[in-house]
Length: 244
Image (tube, rainbow, N blue to C red; front, side, top):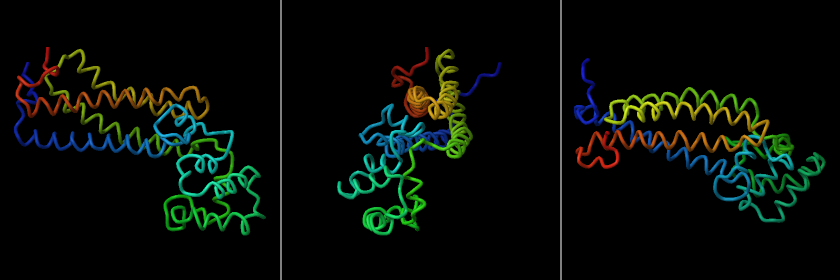
């Protein structure tokens, strides 16, 4: 059987190509983690990603509206307490249109539309119907949103894991662990996406989202680190990443 070329034996051309890809993907994973912290990490009004954040993002906070959740969470610092109280009370009163011009619109113009305006990609809170939609009871992510995000993740991230695994397959590594590390990101990606749908209907499954994200991130980190070390460092400095 012909001997397979390993990472340490690659030409400089392929080492540069593979390293550029792995470093860029590694940076992308860090940015993805930061994006999750910024978008989901404050859903419960507290810093840091928690099970409640996941529940509120997918199942919703059904004790109140999305507008109230935002005003008590990530948007809390954007308006004084008096203004937030007015908007929350309006939402709890089922967002009556009769109070829009005199009570609510002045507040949105002053504190909201600088970000939530007509020129923004965010919901346009200068429009009564849009704000009334946000004032409805929060049922979490919609089926449309879940479908769109699910297919983007399953198609896009699968290719990332395939190429990371392809490069790592050339590493000098225990075959037993190599096969499991290559398979792990795909398995945990499926668990991650499936958990969104399960949490949408049964909030007790939110912990699966945590497990999915941690699982594929850990496996990818090991594969990326191992590949870079074996391409650029002498064998004597591989440390715990030396093959058996």
